[in-house]
Length: 329
Image (tube, rainbow, N blue to C red; front, side, top):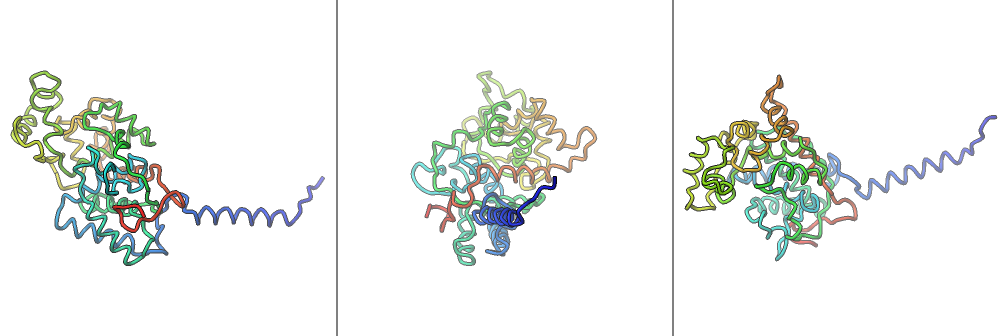
């Protein structure tokens, strides 16, 4: 028997489907590439030019912005809460005290407010600036999905889940897994240490009396221990900074992974990547071992950055577009 369908039903269903589509789209659910193509078409170019201008005056801006995004996304999602000033905010937490690059975000925001008032979020500015920093240091580019809203809450107490420089690989894996990031993402994103520096106070314990042994960390090469002891004497200035990748401090490449292989990783958490079979396999892949070309790190870094920058994003009515990045509206 032929089924009889009311012709109006099709039109009703089509109308409802279109209505739902428009509501979802208007509410800004999710991020997408080209989010500002109509509302602020110069958004990405303004951010890019601002980052380049600051970078030309201070190359340390690049690793600073990259690290800032990482620290923002791991605490209540990528919502620019790291940028908020005030007592007890994320900025004041121990792991964030040495972050650099806030002035770059503020500068870009000021220009964007002049061009497109109330349109571009601080969270998107930070995501774009991190990408541009990688490109300026020789890394591969990637398309950044935008459409984030800015969060209204920033608490120093929420930073306890940030990965630490003494974390074991298992602890690192769990912290990344809690954010929806797998082991490959872990190794890939830690590879961002191919640019930038760290202070002696964060690794000097490895050089002289590691685990109360009276000697250096045995996972470090002897030549590297000597070089680091010269740079960071036991009674020296703990704030003195050394390159995380002394083979190419200012260039985004895969030499960081050669350091991990050769016992030349500065941070203990980085060196431990070689001691775990799962993370070591990824390190080897980025070095071109086992028949691979070693040219995939740049592409994979972009992919992992997109995953990370979409952690717990706020969209639509779940956040706001701050007028200034250092304060909620």
